[in-house]
Image (tube, rainbow, N blue to C red; front, side, top):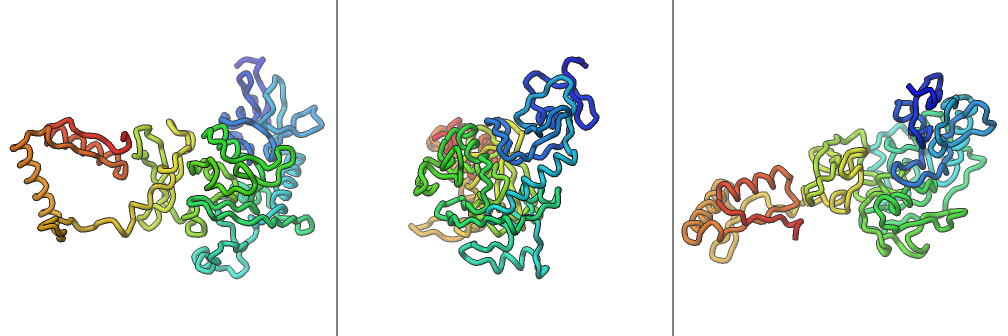
Amino acid sequence: MDAENIININGNKISFEKDETILEVAKRNSIDIPVLCHLKGATTTGSCQVCVVEIDGSSDLVTSCSTKAEKGMNIKTESPKVVESRYNTIQKFLSSGNHNCAISRSDGSDWTSFQMNVQKDDQSKELCPVWGDCELQDLAYRYQVTANPLKHVPSELPMETANPFIVRDFSRCILCGKCVRACREIQVNDAIEFDNPESPTKIIASSDDKVLKDSDCVFCGECIQVCPVGALVEKDVRYKIRPRDTEKVRTTCSYCGVGCQMHLHVKDDKIVKVTGVEGAPPNYGSLCVKGRFGYNFIDSPERLTTPLIKENGEFREATWEEAFTHVADNFNRIKKDHGSDSIGVLTSARVSNEENYLANKFTRAVLKTNNIDHCARL
Protein backbone atom coordinates (compact mmCIF):
# COMPACT_ATOMS: atom_id res chain seq x y z
CA MET A 1 0.00 0.00 0.00
CA ASP A 2 1.53 3.29 -1.12
CA ALA A 3 1.79 5.55 1.94
CA GLU A 4 1.59 8.56 -0.33
CA ASN A 5 -1.98 7.71 -1.37
CA ILE A 6 -3.77 6.90 1.88
CA ILE A 7 -6.83 8.55 3.38
CA ASN A 8 -8.80 7.66 6.48
CA ILE A 9 -12.59 7.22 6.16
CA ASN A 10 -14.47 6.51 9.40
CA GLY A 11 -11.31 5.06 10.93
CA ASN A 12 -10.44 2.91 7.91
CA LYS A 13 -7.17 3.46 6.08
CA ILE A 14 -7.88 3.33 2.35
CA SER A 15 -5.70 3.81 -0.70
CA PHE A 16 -6.82 6.05 -3.54
CA GLU A 17 -5.89 6.67 -7.14
CA LYS A 18 -4.89 9.99 -8.62
CA ASP A 19 -7.86 12.30 -9.31
CA GLU A 20 -10.33 10.03 -7.49
CA THR A 21 -12.99 11.86 -5.51
CA ILE A 22 -13.85 11.00 -1.92
CA LEU A 23 -17.17 9.59 -3.13
CA GLU A 24 -15.47 7.32 -5.67
CA VAL A 25 -13.03 6.00 -3.06
CA ALA A 26 -15.88 5.40 -0.61
CA LYS A 27 -18.05 3.58 -3.14
CA ARG A 28 -15.14 1.41 -4.27
CA ASN A 29 -14.73 0.33 -0.65
CA SER A 30 -18.45 -0.21 0.05
CA ILE A 31 -18.72 2.86 2.30
CA ASP A 32 -22.15 4.38 1.79
CA ILE A 33 -22.34 8.13 1.19
CA PRO A 34 -25.86 9.18 0.08
CA VAL A 35 -26.29 11.20 -3.11
CA LEU A 36 -29.15 12.80 -5.02
CA CYS A 37 -27.68 14.92 -7.81
CA HIS A 38 -24.59 12.82 -8.58
CA LEU A 39 -24.68 11.08 -11.97
CA LYS A 40 -21.86 8.76 -12.99
CA GLY A 41 -20.41 9.66 -16.39
CA ALA A 42 -21.69 13.24 -16.30
CA THR A 43 -20.44 16.58 -15.00
CA THR A 44 -20.26 16.76 -11.20
CA THR A 45 -22.12 19.70 -9.68
CA GLY A 46 -22.50 18.96 -5.97
CA SER A 47 -25.66 21.03 -6.05
CA CYS A 48 -27.82 18.86 -3.79
CA GLN A 49 -25.36 18.98 -0.86
CA VAL A 50 -26.51 15.56 0.37
CA CYS A 51 -23.11 13.90 -0.07
CA VAL A 52 -21.29 16.28 2.27
CA VAL A 53 -18.62 14.86 4.59
CA GLU A 54 -16.47 16.27 7.38
CA ILE A 55 -12.69 16.52 7.01
CA ASP A 56 -10.54 17.09 10.07
CA GLY A 57 -8.97 20.54 9.94
CA SER A 58 -11.64 21.98 7.64
CA SER A 59 -14.19 24.36 9.11
CA ASP A 60 -16.73 23.67 6.37
CA LEU A 61 -18.26 20.44 5.16
CA VAL A 62 -17.31 19.46 1.60
CA THR A 63 -19.23 17.65 -1.13
CA SER A 64 -17.63 14.24 -1.54
CA CYS A 65 -18.66 13.97 -5.19
CA SER A 66 -16.55 16.96 -6.20
CA THR A 67 -13.69 16.89 -3.69
CA LYS A 68 -10.54 15.03 -4.74
CA ALA A 69 -8.96 12.65 -2.26
CA GLU A 70 -5.69 13.95 -0.85
CA LYS A 71 -2.96 12.32 1.19
CA GLY A 72 -3.63 12.28 4.95
CA MET A 73 -7.30 13.25 4.84
CA ASN A 74 -9.26 12.11 7.89
CA ILE A 75 -12.89 11.91 6.78
CA LYS A 76 -16.13 11.31 8.68
CA THR A 77 -19.20 10.43 6.63
CA GLU A 78 -21.79 10.31 9.44
CA SER A 79 -20.55 12.73 12.10
CA PRO A 80 -23.16 14.77 14.04
CA LYS A 81 -22.29 17.80 11.93
CA VAL A 82 -22.77 15.84 8.69
CA VAL A 83 -26.04 14.28 9.85
CA GLU A 84 -27.41 17.68 10.88
CA SER A 85 -26.50 19.15 7.49
CA ARG A 86 -28.16 16.29 5.61
CA TYR A 87 -31.24 16.55 7.80
CA ASN A 88 -31.60 20.26 6.99
CA THR A 89 -30.98 19.67 3.28
CA ILE A 90 -33.54 16.88 3.04
CA GLN A 91 -36.06 18.94 5.02
CA LYS A 92 -35.54 21.81 2.59
CA PHE A 93 -36.41 19.51 -0.32
CA LEU A 94 -39.45 18.11 1.46
CA SER A 95 -40.67 21.60 2.32
CA SER A 96 -40.44 22.82 -1.27
CA GLY A 97 -43.10 21.64 -3.70
CA ASN A 98 -45.45 18.71 -3.17
CA HIS A 99 -43.69 15.94 -1.25
CA ASN A 100 -45.03 13.56 1.35
CA CYS A 101 -42.17 11.11 1.66
CA ALA A 102 -42.34 10.58 5.41
CA ILE A 103 -46.10 10.41 5.99
CA SER A 104 -48.36 7.36 6.18
CA ARG A 105 -51.92 6.80 5.09
CA SER A 106 -54.13 8.06 7.92
CA ASP A 107 -56.91 5.57 7.16
CA GLY A 108 -54.53 2.60 6.92
CA SER A 109 -55.74 1.57 3.47
CA ASP A 110 -53.33 -0.20 1.18
CA TRP A 111 -52.02 0.79 -2.26
CA THR A 112 -54.73 -1.12 -4.13
CA SER A 113 -57.49 0.75 -2.32
CA PHE A 114 -55.72 4.03 -2.88
CA GLN A 115 -55.13 3.61 -6.61
CA MET A 116 -58.79 2.81 -7.14
CA ASN A 117 -59.65 6.25 -5.76
CA VAL A 118 -57.02 8.33 -7.57
CA GLN A 119 -58.66 11.09 -9.60
CA LYS A 120 -58.42 10.78 -13.37
CA ASP A 121 -56.35 13.94 -13.60
CA ASP A 122 -53.77 12.34 -11.27
CA GLN A 123 -53.63 15.49 -9.16
CA SER A 124 -53.97 13.58 -5.89
CA LYS A 125 -51.34 14.52 -3.34
CA GLU A 126 -52.16 11.71 -0.91
CA LEU A 127 -49.44 9.37 -2.10
CA CYS A 128 -46.44 9.82 -4.37
CA PRO A 129 -46.57 7.84 -7.66
CA VAL A 130 -43.09 6.46 -6.95
CA TRP A 131 -43.81 5.59 -3.31
CA GLY A 132 -41.31 2.86 -2.40
CA ASP A 133 -39.00 3.68 -5.29
CA CYS A 134 -37.80 7.20 -4.47
CA GLU A 135 -34.30 8.21 -3.38
CA LEU A 136 -35.58 11.27 -1.51
CA GLN A 137 -38.05 9.09 0.37
CA ASP A 138 -35.27 6.65 1.27
CA LEU A 139 -33.22 9.51 2.70
CA ALA A 140 -36.23 10.90 4.57
CA TYR A 141 -36.67 7.52 6.27
CA ARG A 142 -32.95 7.09 6.83
CA TYR A 143 -32.57 10.41 8.64
CA GLN A 144 -36.15 10.57 9.98
CA VAL A 145 -36.96 13.85 8.28
CA THR A 146 -40.38 15.42 7.78
CA ALA A 147 -41.26 18.62 6.01
CA ASN A 148 -41.30 21.81 8.04
CA PRO A 149 -44.88 23.15 7.78
CA LEU A 150 -43.70 26.63 8.75
CA LYS A 151 -41.32 26.75 5.80
CA HIS A 152 -43.43 24.88 3.26
CA VAL A 153 -43.44 26.48 -0.18
CA PRO A 154 -46.08 24.71 -2.31
CA SER A 155 -45.65 24.52 -6.04
CA GLU A 156 -48.32 25.89 -8.33
CA LEU A 157 -46.66 24.62 -11.52
CA PRO A 158 -49.12 22.56 -13.58
CA MET A 159 -48.43 18.94 -14.37
CA GLU A 160 -47.53 18.14 -17.98
CA THR A 161 -49.42 15.10 -19.28
CA ALA A 162 -49.45 15.90 -23.00
CA ASN A 163 -46.50 13.64 -23.74
CA PRO A 164 -47.13 10.09 -24.99
CA PHE A 165 -44.78 8.33 -22.57
CA ILE A 166 -43.74 10.67 -19.75
CA VAL A 167 -45.65 12.60 -17.07
CA ARG A 168 -43.70 15.64 -15.85
CA ASP A 169 -44.76 16.66 -12.34
CA PHE A 170 -42.90 19.92 -11.73
CA SER A 171 -44.27 20.14 -8.19
CA ARG A 172 -42.10 17.17 -7.18
CA CYS A 173 -38.93 18.33 -8.98
CA ILE A 174 -36.03 19.16 -6.64
CA LEU A 175 -33.97 20.78 -9.45
CA CYS A 176 -31.06 18.39 -8.96
CA GLY A 177 -30.28 18.63 -12.69
CA LYS A 178 -29.71 14.91 -13.23
CA CYS A 179 -32.23 14.77 -16.06
CA VAL A 180 -30.60 17.72 -17.82
CA ARG A 181 -27.13 16.22 -17.60
CA ALA A 182 -28.38 12.77 -18.61
CA CYS A 183 -30.12 14.21 -21.66
CA ARG A 184 -27.20 16.44 -22.62
CA GLU A 185 -24.11 14.44 -21.68
CA ILE A 186 -25.15 10.79 -21.76
CA GLN A 187 -27.77 10.63 -24.52
CA VAL A 188 -26.54 13.83 -26.23
CA ASN A 189 -30.08 14.92 -27.11
CA ASP A 190 -30.00 18.31 -25.39
CA ALA A 191 -33.80 18.49 -25.30
CA ILE A 192 -34.21 19.98 -21.81
CA GLU A 193 -32.48 22.61 -19.69
CA PHE A 194 -32.90 24.88 -16.66
CA ASP A 195 -35.08 27.92 -17.24
CA ASN A 196 -32.40 30.01 -15.52
CA PRO A 197 -28.98 28.39 -15.01
CA GLU A 198 -28.05 30.84 -12.25
CA SER A 199 -31.28 30.57 -10.27
CA PRO A 200 -33.43 27.76 -11.74
CA THR A 201 -37.10 27.37 -10.94
CA LYS A 202 -38.08 24.79 -13.55
CA ILE A 203 -36.77 22.30 -16.13
CA ILE A 204 -37.94 23.43 -19.56
CA ALA A 205 -37.97 21.89 -23.04
CA SER A 206 -36.15 24.44 -25.24
CA SER A 207 -38.56 27.16 -24.12
CA ASP A 208 -40.98 27.48 -21.23
CA ASP A 209 -44.04 27.43 -23.50
CA LYS A 210 -43.08 24.18 -25.23
CA VAL A 211 -44.09 20.71 -24.01
CA LEU A 212 -41.70 17.79 -24.25
CA LYS A 213 -43.43 16.17 -27.22
CA ASP A 214 -42.82 19.31 -29.29
CA SER A 215 -39.12 19.53 -28.42
CA ASP A 216 -36.04 17.60 -29.61
CA CYS A 217 -36.88 14.81 -27.14
CA VAL A 218 -36.64 11.30 -28.63
CA PHE A 219 -38.37 9.73 -25.59
CA CYS A 220 -35.48 7.47 -24.66
CA GLY A 221 -36.58 7.80 -21.03
CA GLU A 222 -33.06 8.42 -19.73
CA CYS A 223 -34.46 11.30 -17.65
CA ILE A 224 -36.92 8.93 -15.96
CA GLN A 225 -34.18 6.41 -15.23
CA VAL A 226 -32.05 8.99 -13.39
CA CYS A 227 -34.77 11.06 -11.68
CA PRO A 228 -34.39 10.54 -7.90
CA VAL A 229 -37.96 11.62 -7.10
CA GLY A 230 -41.46 11.41 -8.58
CA ALA A 231 -41.05 14.31 -11.00
CA LEU A 232 -40.68 12.09 -14.08
CA VAL A 233 -42.76 8.93 -14.33
CA GLU A 234 -43.77 6.58 -17.14
CA LYS A 235 -47.31 7.47 -18.15
CA ASP A 236 -48.53 3.87 -18.35
CA VAL A 237 -47.13 3.03 -14.91
CA ARG A 238 -48.13 6.03 -12.81
CA TYR A 239 -50.28 5.00 -9.83
CA LYS A 240 -50.67 1.49 -11.25
CA ILE A 241 -47.79 -0.50 -9.80
CA ARG A 242 -45.40 -0.48 -6.86
CA PRO A 243 -41.89 -1.94 -7.07
CA ARG A 244 -42.60 -4.53 -4.38
CA ASP A 245 -45.51 -5.88 -6.45
CA THR A 246 -43.33 -6.70 -9.46
CA GLU A 247 -40.66 -9.25 -10.29
CA LYS A 248 -37.58 -8.07 -12.18
CA VAL A 249 -36.43 -10.32 -15.00
CA ARG A 250 -33.18 -9.48 -16.77
CA THR A 251 -33.07 -9.98 -20.51
CA THR A 252 -31.53 -8.65 -23.73
CA CYS A 253 -33.40 -6.16 -25.89
CA SER A 254 -34.25 -7.68 -29.27
CA TYR A 255 -35.01 -4.49 -31.18
CA CYS A 256 -31.53 -4.27 -32.70
CA GLY A 257 -28.10 -5.91 -32.54
CA VAL A 258 -26.56 -3.72 -29.84
CA GLY A 259 -27.58 -6.14 -27.08
CA CYS A 260 -28.82 -3.65 -24.49
CA GLN A 261 -29.46 -5.19 -21.07
CA MET A 262 -32.86 -4.51 -19.56
CA HIS A 263 -35.04 -5.45 -16.64
CA LEU A 264 -38.61 -6.48 -17.36
CA HIS A 265 -40.85 -5.59 -14.42
CA VAL A 266 -43.49 -8.32 -14.38
CA LYS A 267 -46.77 -8.38 -12.50
CA ASP A 268 -49.40 -11.11 -12.90
CA ASP A 269 -47.38 -12.57 -15.81
CA LYS A 270 -47.52 -9.29 -17.70
CA ILE A 271 -44.72 -6.82 -18.43
CA VAL A 272 -45.72 -3.51 -16.84
CA LYS A 273 -42.46 -1.58 -17.07
CA VAL A 274 -38.95 -1.76 -18.55
CA THR A 275 -35.75 -0.27 -17.13
CA GLY A 276 -32.13 -0.45 -18.22
CA VAL A 277 -29.69 -2.56 -16.20
CA GLU A 278 -27.40 -0.14 -14.37
CA GLY A 279 -23.66 -0.78 -14.57
CA ALA A 280 -23.91 -3.47 -17.25
CA PRO A 281 -22.48 -3.17 -20.77
CA PRO A 282 -23.15 -2.26 -23.46
CA ASN A 283 -25.84 0.28 -22.47
CA TYR A 284 -25.14 0.87 -18.74
CA GLY A 285 -28.80 1.62 -17.99
CA SER A 286 -29.61 3.61 -21.13
CA LEU A 287 -32.32 2.47 -23.54
CA CYS A 288 -33.94 3.83 -26.68
CA VAL A 289 -37.64 4.66 -26.97
CA LYS A 290 -38.43 1.19 -28.36
CA GLY A 291 -36.48 -0.67 -25.71
CA ARG A 292 -38.03 1.27 -22.82
CA PHE A 293 -41.59 1.78 -24.03
CA GLY A 294 -42.18 -0.69 -26.87
CA TYR A 295 -43.60 -3.62 -24.93
CA ASN A 296 -47.38 -3.14 -24.93
CA PHE A 297 -47.76 -5.26 -28.07
CA ILE A 298 -46.95 -8.35 -25.98
CA ASP A 299 -50.32 -8.41 -24.25
CA SER A 300 -52.25 -6.51 -26.90
CA PRO A 301 -55.85 -7.73 -27.28
CA GLU A 302 -55.38 -7.33 -31.04
CA ARG A 303 -52.89 -10.20 -31.19
CA LEU A 304 -54.10 -13.38 -32.87
CA THR A 305 -54.48 -16.32 -30.51
CA THR A 306 -55.77 -18.77 -33.10
CA PRO A 307 -54.15 -19.51 -36.49
CA LEU A 308 -56.02 -18.36 -39.59
CA ILE A 309 -55.87 -20.02 -43.01
CA LYS A 310 -57.06 -18.14 -46.06
CA GLU A 311 -59.39 -20.04 -48.40
CA ASN A 312 -61.39 -18.55 -51.27
CA GLY A 313 -60.41 -15.07 -50.20
CA GLU A 314 -61.61 -15.52 -46.63
CA PHE A 315 -59.81 -16.38 -43.41
CA ARG A 316 -60.99 -19.28 -41.29
CA GLU A 317 -59.81 -20.42 -37.89
CA ALA A 318 -57.61 -23.52 -37.77
CA THR A 319 -55.80 -25.64 -35.22
CA TRP A 320 -52.08 -25.17 -34.67
CA GLU A 321 -51.38 -28.65 -36.07
CA GLU A 322 -53.35 -27.86 -39.23
CA ALA A 323 -51.57 -24.51 -39.62
CA PHE A 324 -48.09 -26.01 -39.20
CA THR A 325 -48.90 -28.79 -41.66
CA HIS A 326 -50.24 -26.24 -44.16
CA VAL A 327 -47.08 -24.12 -43.96
CA ALA A 328 -44.72 -27.13 -44.11
CA ASP A 329 -46.50 -28.61 -47.13
CA ASN A 330 -46.29 -25.32 -49.00
CA PHE A 331 -42.61 -24.84 -48.14
CA ASN A 332 -41.84 -28.33 -49.47
CA ARG A 333 -43.85 -27.67 -52.63
CA ILE A 334 -42.10 -24.36 -53.32
CA LYS A 335 -38.65 -25.88 -52.70
CA LYS A 336 -39.42 -28.74 -55.08
CA ASP A 337 -40.85 -26.55 -57.83
CA HIS A 338 -38.58 -23.48 -57.59
CA GLY A 339 -35.62 -24.33 -55.36
CA SER A 340 -34.70 -23.30 -51.80
CA ASP A 341 -33.51 -19.86 -52.81
CA SER A 342 -37.01 -18.95 -53.95
CA ILE A 343 -37.92 -18.71 -50.24
CA GLY A 344 -36.95 -15.84 -47.96
CA VAL A 345 -37.47 -15.35 -44.22
CA LEU A 346 -37.89 -12.02 -42.44
CA THR A 347 -37.56 -12.17 -38.64
CA SER A 348 -38.88 -9.69 -36.12
CA ALA A 349 -37.65 -7.48 -33.29
CA ARG A 350 -40.88 -8.30 -31.51
CA VAL A 351 -39.78 -11.81 -30.64
CA SER A 352 -36.94 -12.93 -28.40
CA ASN A 353 -33.33 -13.35 -29.51
CA GLU A 354 -33.72 -17.08 -28.93
CA GLU A 355 -36.65 -17.22 -31.34
CA ASN A 356 -34.72 -15.23 -33.92
CA TYR A 357 -31.85 -17.70 -33.55
CA LEU A 358 -34.23 -20.61 -34.12
CA ALA A 359 -35.58 -18.86 -37.22
CA ASN A 360 -32.00 -18.52 -38.48
CA LYS A 361 -31.26 -22.23 -37.91
CA PHE A 362 -34.56 -23.25 -39.50
CA THR A 363 -33.91 -21.11 -42.58
CA ARG A 364 -30.37 -22.38 -43.19
CA ALA A 365 -30.65 -25.99 -41.97
CA VAL A 366 -34.22 -26.90 -42.97
CA LEU A 367 -35.14 -24.59 -45.84
CA LYS A 368 -31.52 -24.75 -47.12
CA THR A 369 -31.26 -21.06 -47.98
CA ASN A 370 -29.33 -18.06 -46.71
CA ASN A 371 -32.20 -15.71 -47.56
CA ILE A 372 -32.90 -14.45 -44.04
CA ASP A 373 -33.03 -10.88 -42.80
CA HIS A 374 -34.25 -8.91 -39.79
CA CYS A 375 -36.63 -5.98 -39.71
CA ALA A 376 -34.27 -3.86 -37.58
CA ARG A 377 -31.65 -3.84 -40.35
CA LEU A 378 -34.14 -2.34 -42.77
